[in-house]
Image: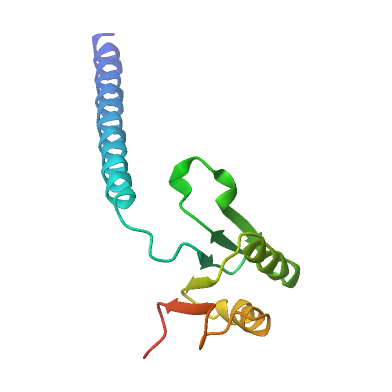
Length: 138
């Protein structure tokens, strides 16, 4: 019987140690987020009418302003199909966006880029489109 109690006690201690490590890790992550938020809050706004789009194979995430001010409507997810791309275009116009930065790790940026360019978002004049493409070789 003593052996069973010893195993139970050992497992309980392991669970407790795991919970402590997890709590310390979560506290460390929360502190890092606060430091990063303070650093970003101090940066000047250079493009007030800019949007950033993170492009994926199934959905695109669009941010049209600083999301740290409590407005959840500034960050939206849109589907990657044609209707979703049209919704992105309407969303950008609704928020008065003139500059768009696209981030993609594949070829999924091409349809959105072509739609934006065809609707007045031209890469050679204002409004501009900037592409940050991880696989693109310049």
